[in-house]
Image (cartoon, rainbow over all chains, first blue to last red; front, side):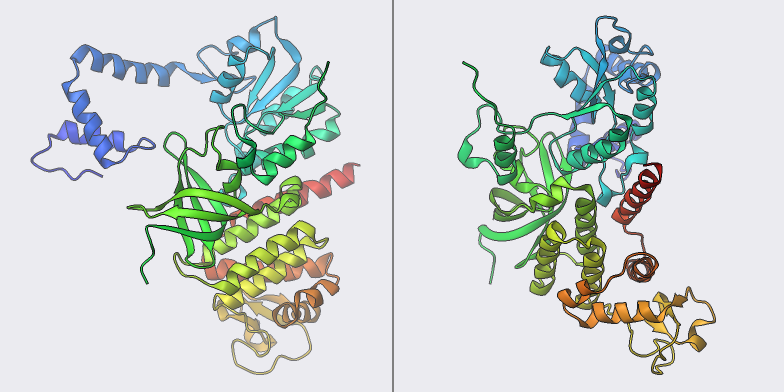
Length: 205
Length: 260
């Protein structure tokens, strides 16, 4: 990206090039970050560099749930207090953090590492679907919660998994979809409102 | 006439990609401005009031503000959500295939009312039709026609002689059907049965209702599909991604049927 000019020292130009490869970082942002790192104390720069290297060397995927972890199996998979009969299937590792923050789920997880997007050429073979099927072979699992994102790719993934898992006889559930807390009804789109009506619940007295 | 700073247009969201923290770049096909990329800010947050209206395969009314690189969505409202497409994987995969073809064939910022209308009608048909694959074949043939890539089916695309009522060949590189003399030499030509030629001609000249009256299950349907697909791949000089997914669903469906 960065043409080597006499005004930019070669190591700095190299750093700008590397930063530019990151998602959401344009040429100007890459330059700004590089000059910020240049002015940073050496100890802080070393800490950042070693954090990146350590992350790459030590973090791996859990062989059971496919979440990112430094010990395999991950802490959630070896936790004896968790309910092993339920697996919550999510698209990305960050989704596990969101679900764990609720503190209302005590089952297991499974990360697909993406969602089906036929237009972009991302099919089931690019996701951790076979690993999920492998987990179901033990017969211990009774319920699969499909917690893929409520967008077109997430819905396609959920529909595909439903089709694939239904013959195995496990209970398949989908996270409820409807109106967000704090939202206005008048701004809701047709699909969300229709789903909210479908999933309406009786008010218990 | 220059486009005002804020303007309204209807459009169909063809595809989307993530941008930054919570934004998306949407590829929208509009009847007035053609295909264009627009930026939708904050639509990946659950609190976004616009995200539900801006899902792919939604026909919506957009209010856009001109931006430096791409225009920004300032407001939107769903006109048609094609709900049955989202509840059925077979319908959805075909609709995404249609959206991908539009994305690949239509150049940016080139408006075409007939092509826009074709896409809207196809999405409506895919939401309701029983014969999804025949609906797609009709769409493919009309799209090729409207984009200037109409396959030659009346005379031999090689020598110009009238095609005889026998099995001929289909050679995408030559531009359509070719006679036995011209197709025998290779050039990617495949046998084109007389029935498949008749179906292709019907798709080209007949109405949608005419095309739907013909039963094309089994080998005839697959033959027509393969010829049209090879023609499209030849024109685009690349595969259509969504086709692989449709193929996979079909294969797995057949496998489940055998197991059951």
